[in-house]
Amino acid sequence: MENGGGTPDNERLRRLEAVTDATLSRLDVSDMLDELLDRVRDLLNADTAAILLLDPHSQQLVATAAKGLEEEVRRGVRIPLGRGFAGRIARSRQPLLLTDVTANDVINPILLERGIRSLLGVPIFLGGDVVGVLHVGALSRREFSAEDVGLLQLAADRAAVAAQIRTRKAEQTAALALQRSLLPPTLPTLPGLSLAARYVPGHEFGIGGDWYDVFAHPSGWLGVVIGDVAGHGLAAAVVMGRVRSALRAYSLITHDPGEVLTMLDRKVRHFEAGSLTTALYAMISPDRETVLISSAGHLLPVLAVPGRRTALVDAPVDAPLGVGRTRRGRHTTTVAMPPGALLVCYTDGLVERRGEIIDVGVDALIDVVRPDDPESTCGSIMARLGRAQPTDDIAILAIRREPEN
Image (spheres, rainbow, N blue to C red):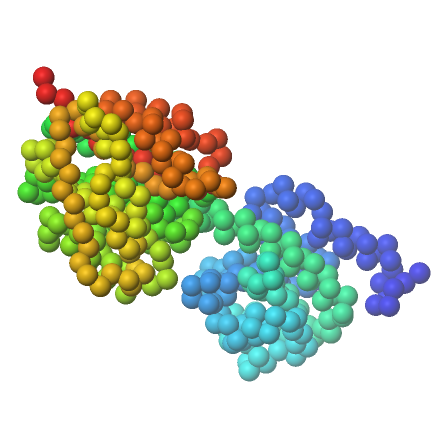
């Protein structure tokens, strides 16, 4: 018996199985795309097959894998949305068949150079969004059938899985590279101070928008920063990197943390519109006796002083960066740092719990912090408040003024 397209049912079943074969999923991304294109060319009796994936930043389709059109990938062909054969498919979100290809139909000269006579292309969907285009071509005139369209769309669905894996791996690689460059690999050794830190990602990419920074100022003051850009992954990490660099630059202009955060706020509002960023910036004096602190929507640090009750630093909290609500200058609070005092800065992932007000977590942190060695204190904090699978990034930075002999 034959189906409506004239292909025997068992042959049609074989063709469907060829592009849904589970072995495809066991290949790495590049091999999976190559194997998929090989199978598509064979099943559709096509001379060429190509996958173009959408670059969301440039809104262009980028040639990613090809069989019979390898030059597309080598030349880095890019097709704007809405233009040419692939661009029209991506914009319309519909399959497109061209029985007789002309120069008016395509903007990629390689298709004409290769002598492509007929083309069939379908969009690649992921979560309802078009993320690319899969197309096949024939060197002789060809009238593709409705069954061909369905089979190619099925192959495009498999390509979508590979595209997702490829994108996630690329983001992971870039995010981890940013993490290595933006989070201090080791903390500096400084006279009169000891420091320790922890960073635990709450996202599979290994980095989000949380960061901490410690840098010595030419004047002898020490800059200490901890902050949180809303979001996870590469996008948040990129914003975080730009904010971190800008803060360092502004710190060379003034020692006043409030003034630095005021300048940083203008930068975020103008260049990082739409991002929500909190930051705590402190400057420790060269004699280590004084800390100047300003908070832009960030949780206040915990201060533990020998012979006193551990508590949050008593300081105002101004609006986060970029929200446009700060009409007056930001506050700077002077805090005494007696010998042996320990200052613990942290991000909200440490103290926030679903179903609890944040005060519960903050109180638990205060209970565990003692004016002890920063390294052991960070260990105690993570043992008490850390989670095996955090849902948000956690950053901790502990700074202790060394006790007097």
